[in-house]
Length: 596
View 1: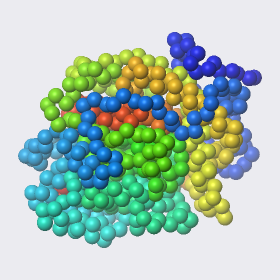
View 2: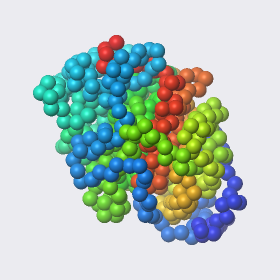
View 3: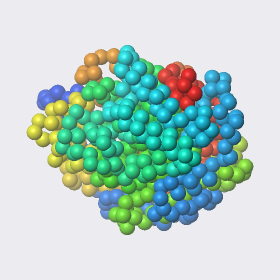
View 4: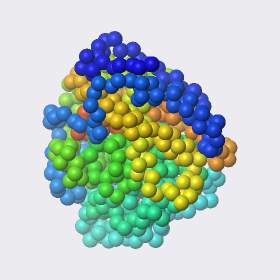
């Protein structure tokens, strides 16, 4: 039956009712049989795809990439030149941070009140000869060697060369010996997700063969910017194969395990990036995010993940550089470390500068005692029915408690909002990311290579292959409607708040890895709150705010206006300060700075 949507400007938001998604714990296997093809068809119909994409008149023109209306300049920020050198942007971001108290930071008993070592802690230790990058490198190498003997196997990295790490660390140590470190990031150890080029490591996308059809000849732009700041790149982080999953399961190299609970997934697809940061082995890592792939694992692993505005970071040198929903972004243990890494990698490609017209990058000025004073004018938007649509109310209640504390301490307003057409948004995102992924992969996985992909991946690609060109165009018409709704919301509020995920880290099935399959029950809850930032290109940050009764981390997500990274970083910093006392040491944690 044909359905006709009202023009977006005629929709009566007061009449919108929340459409609770009916999630069934149905597993999809990848056997090429008619029964499974019929099952995919049934699942597709359940998700209303046929109704929304083919049986509906959508009276809006398509929006093929995010189009942002002009935004008001952010307040209380330090603006930098995008064309400047990465180390200059990092220096500017460093000057925006609160005064560093070296004595209390270094002497703190981490067992009494756990906290992660920050980038500034490492820099201070290097400057004062309490440690050197080479000493820390040996701690990391020793831990990674232990991983090879662990049961179950804990492969945070897919590609790693101990001698290359030692060489980079020795060069950094020499710079400190000479009193000439490049930046605050000099000697800081980072992992790079396996879909981002980091020469000479191959970029496999966690497959067994992708590096054969796409050899790496140089660093990705983002990686090159980090290297120019003195960062030590330890290798390529594990991930869900080709980024087409949100648990981090990988039958080829083993599944990275959640440092808070070894029998739980770390989340994906940037699984190794989040897990290695949560374990203490790296201060930060790079991930990619096309459907929550930075924020989901950051939430499940209890660390901070920043999804930047679409087009803010040059995607050249990544496997997902031709899509309209993906970005490269940082994962770190603290908001300030995310901000320092973000400062190093921010900067659009020449094409995005022309089409998107981004403003100059800026950072929140957190250096004064009244840095959070302006938060009393910040309006937080909360769609209560959506906010509470979680697997366990522990998640929404913890997030709500934290928001109430922020409001009480800093005077933020929490306003009720309505976000229409959430089901349509999920469909539009699925069609967009699926069609774009299939388009980029089609030239590469012929000649039987597709049969080497994991069952899970093959299932997703088969599902994506059922979309038509008309479906893709219809999805882009929905994108325009949803952009309008969100821009209207941002006239009333400054930040949209929600849990990052609707459930905490799910169990890793104990069955044979090849028998594992996609569980729509898990993916539905993990992806519930993350889609808008990808489809609409909005900035979003996930930060840990507490734990459930099983001791698993809970993440809160802040979604900002286009180019509004400074605003969400400021709010996240204030929330992090409130939640600091509740921080718990992960079950798997390495103190690579003190070596104990």
